[in-house]
Length: 179
Image 1 (cartoon, helix red, strand yellow):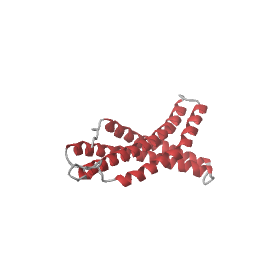
Image 2 (image 1 turned 30 degrees about the vertical axis):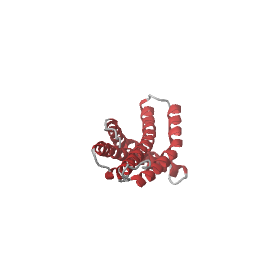
Image 3 (image 1 turned 120 degrees about the vertical axis):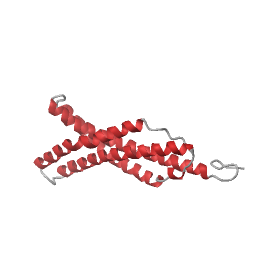
Image 4 (image 1 turned 180 degrees about the vertical axis):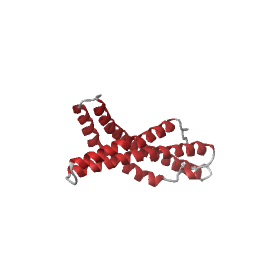
């Protein structure tokens, strides 16, 4: 009698290939979600400065945004690292799959990988800024240097944030994978 995940003839390679691809898709989606969360907190942190400088938000609002995002930051990075660990274990799953469902799954994975890379770049900017803030708080350097580093990070932030937004827009249009 066949078991769950096996074919009536005893082979389960198609089913196991589909399961492996589903795991790779699922874990890559988790990387995108975790990296996107970090990138969005970075976007809020950066936008808060922009809004302060333009007079859109008062200093108290800006500081509240900075505090909320800063406190969320370590969790963002931890969640991303956990997702990356799980993804590494599932890597290559879709390469084992063949047939018509494989085409959509492989296309989706390509777009997912691009979104993951773009979101990870923005999340890396966030991680770097969090490290800089922690170093400043620990007294590793003074306020003037910290401000220079913040302005440089803020100035360069749109490059990776905008790339992440474009990649996530493309991901929303990617085919669905149904292995």
